[in-house]
Image 1: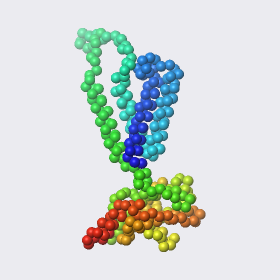
Image 2 (image 1 turned 90 degrees about the vertical axis):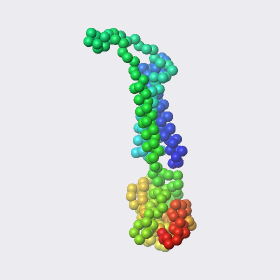
Image 3 (image 1 turned 45 degrees about the horizontal axis):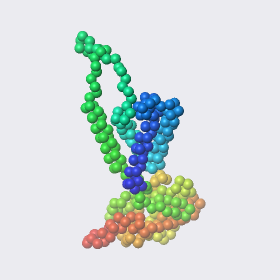
Length: 286
């Protein structure tokens, strides 16, 4: 998912939330009269109530589909809170205001306390200003937090999709940083793999290796972890170049073995650039 797509997801969830709360407001006599200038009919209220709940369900389903369960629900709740607060400030400025209701005035008692006839002081503008500033600050903090949320590696735009044998998959490097040097200055790189849900139950093992395996007994490092996000950290040879090949070997539960490969500059251009830089640097070894 690209940044533009992610921004569109946020805006759509917010718009659906605004429309949902507007529909639910139409479903009540008090707010319906406020918004329409007249009391809505029972049929209108029923339709508005159904539309409001459907819009809420639609916004939740869209958020979960676009950003997975955890991030999607958090996104949905956050933008719904902002949408609800926005209507709190929009309603008092709505063009069709309900008629003011006459209230008995409170009188001042002998001890100076307001009684039934004393006029009450109008609400202070300072309180509304503070509430508006709090709403703005909440929106800014929430939007900033969402902007810093990084997409899972397998959902990023540079992830590779393909098919090995009868199974489809997505493969991506965990990050675009240079390889990590471990003991004896061996460069290591982590990759992540996910097969389709229907494919996964037929797969026994998936391994990854730079350069073509010489035999099916040496196909590289096996992927470990949960089925929806397998991980494998592999060592990288000193001879790695742009045209080096990254081989994926997948063994099915039926015993059949399938392989596919990519050029390293397709999978991890940053790693290729790092090796080239190491070779150019004097007295430097990767």
